[in-house]
Length: 129
Image (cartoon, rainbow, N blue to C red):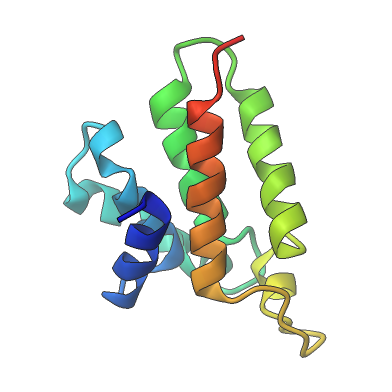
């Protein structure tokens, strides 16, 4: 099973979007699933209220930092991940993705989780510059 499909399966087990992405990459972090779930707890639902950044993107950015920080600047990779996610999902803000104010859903939660994991995989697999 790919990491992205694992992340979607983890979401179906009642983890929020952020926790699902974090848990799908747990093996790269050295952190326990319990710790990762606690880290991701406040980021589901657009940081708890749909106003903020999508939890799936928050989880992907967190893993990026845990895995790549210390190997040099990570900000360029973080920006690239953010741009790619926004292009794929239509926005990085949960309220816009879910169409809270417009009624138009740009991307489902499972797809946000899937795309965040796939895009993170690509960033992590890219050769170091």
